[in-house]
Length: 294
Image (tube, rainbow, N blue to C red; front, side, top):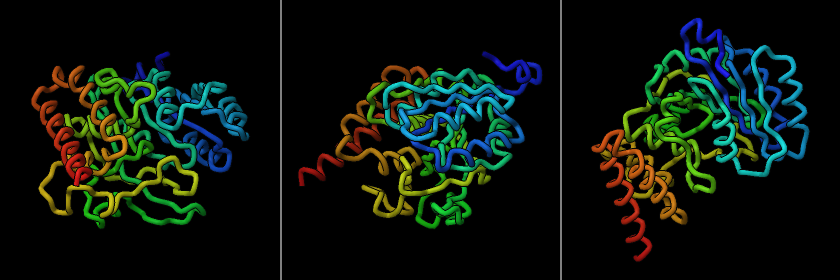
């Protein structure tokens, strides 16, 4: 269903895809921050991953009192966080798709700021900075990008799905990882958009991202995250992402997943960029094999 208000104003319609699982502790705060957006979404699609607490009841109560469309997908099998996001994303209809964690808090300007950078018909992935909060809500770092810089990483090393949005054209171009894929939805978006020049990093911190013991992905890279790169190396952002993420024990399956999408779609998008990414993936796999062989 398309939002007629978006059609009439010429602005891209906004879908938010949220994945939940036993999220009743933090979920109300996240939902309130979504309702308080300066530019509200045209739809919110939530897939619950078989929660055993009060999450689904909270979602239905929220859906009844907000002015935008909310679809709650509950009662299905456990998929895990990455495929749970993919399932929610496949059910969307908007021109720009945002990913929402259940335990963050979005600042009021997030949807408006990011969606203004989207271009109709252009495949784009839009990333933004964020603040890091501790479990008790105290501020741990006002800027994740600054935290990365202190550790010798550029903004391209930011992989948090809750800080990205993709245009419909990006999804139509690349689709999503297949069910059972060892590649998460956020790394899929990050590597392909980076390698093909379809990524934009916005400097504004637009959410407060809470780190706690139950995060599905609380990883922050540091020096130990590197395998074959060093700070200051003249390597491009795609090679850095590969170095940080594509490692044993699932290096073979992850490498094959990306090589397959390059064969299927990448050459038609940009043959030169596609071949460059192939070389990076294969070189990374060879380095790890040599290292394992001693």
